[in-house]
Length: 221
Image (tube, rainbow, N blue to C red; front, side, top):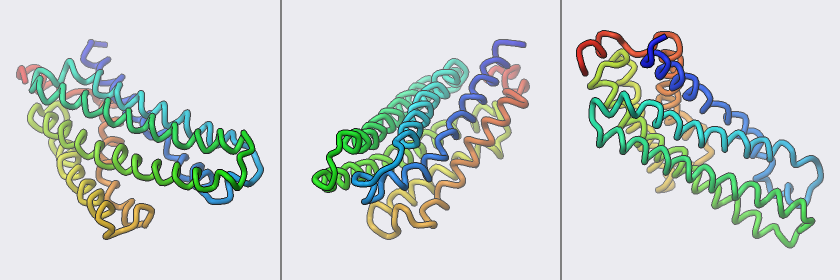
């Protein structure tokens, strides 16, 4: 297996790993509920959700770092920008996890009804940073990545176009939520994220199964 094939394989696997946090959408619904801080029951699901998000944050950085040696041959500044954007995106995820686990800590400490206001504030902070870190920043990352992949032809251009088009669609959704045109948890908000999710999942599968296109490599692009 050539070094480029290994790079593509590793990048693809890491991209697929970034989807492991999907269960947190259901897990956190209970943690973010008003009754969680005063209720009973195990905290393990919330802690597992935090761990899954941490894995996603590290994997996000990993995708950009692993692809950097290949992408910098196309445009070093843009490739570096992708690494920086992924680091910023992952940083917001870490902060979001800290907010969620702070709610868990208050519950474990028996803060009870006295901590309801604090819990609600932490939920609001989590929702806001989630919107920034897992909506705005992924859109920027996928626009950068889609552009470089399109120019280099390392993957089929049709696949690259999903990222180029999906990024702006996600940005439209972000600003629609930011200005109160739609609710953050409304079904329509999730629709804006579908193209980006499709791009990253399809890219992960393609890199695992096929790797980079040899024609682009041999052409010196």
